[in-house]
Image 1: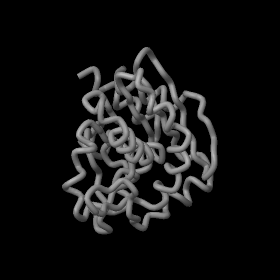
Image 2: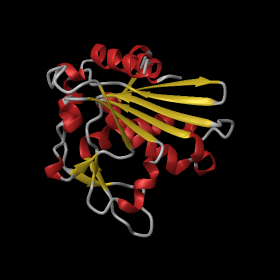
Image 3: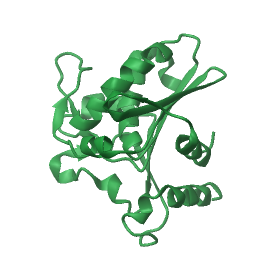
Image 4: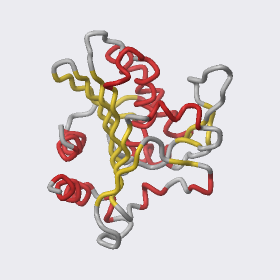
Length: 207
């Protein structure tokens, strides 16, 4: 599926709404499971977005301590319980996580969850974070960076959300960064609008 197609599907698919204002959708196509995470759609989402003190994460090895955005962790913990059974399905050959904005922040954690729990299919686990904020705290992160080797952050240049929380607070993007668009083409807020992201994805795909 092309980036533009995944992004449109992320915008249009019906979502399940659960505790902590968490919104997710599962879609199986053949032996591939798509996990979609929705953008902010209410006050609780925005409160979680700005609850950015770093908190130790659960999945640590050999006593190693790594940290992530507290608000996104709280929301993803609600989603984790709902998707666990589907992620564990051994008939799957591939799992792809897709999120936009707030949902892209959640996709950062979801991709790691899938990577950690499905070592048998790590070569086909993928993640796509459109217009993602930073979620992972950078200090001492090197030993777990491999968990996002197949994770792509897509930034429409100038998008303010992709620069938050600020690097000065210790946060970083993980995986690989793909920049689309052109500097100065949009304001820092217009660059985050879905219609402008979709337009730049189509231009990028046309070469």
